[in-house]
Length: 199
Image (cartoon, rainbow, N blue to C red; front, side):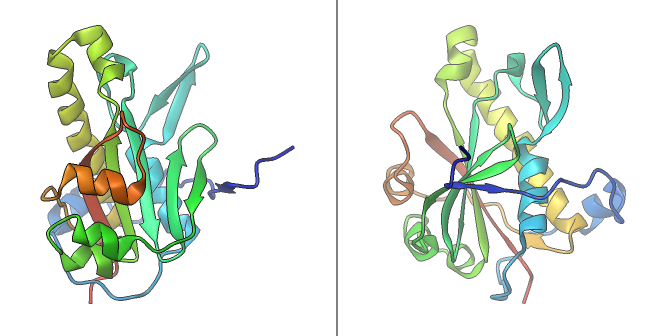
């Protein structure tokens, strides 16, 4: 029996109309967004660029962003006006976590930054450090932070390729974000990326 709390995302595209070079050239941080919602194709493409499955070998899955020891400590959450969700790379699904619009509350956890409440989509990159520190010790913390940068840059460049804008946000209260999203105790928020159409 299929789970009813899952949304199947459309199959991601692997070829677009914008070159990597053009995406790099055009990428800028934009903080003012229109209220126009993103569709599931756009959301799915952004999430695939962050942590999507890009290949398989011997029963093992590879993802869009490199990861130390292929341990994949990242968990990707997102907020829209329709609620809160978690991305499940295996199966390319969204897990529905709630139906409340938490964008304004998330903005309150991030010094009231309006871009978070304005954008139709907020992507929150979280980490479970123990997935990496169990193998690499304290050095694993650095590896996690490096990986967060890989994931975020993929999202920013994918946004440009889709004709969208984004802004990187690192100024927030970790504890308040965890409370707002009802994150498990071992999930540490590292990065918030509002995405949408520029005003």
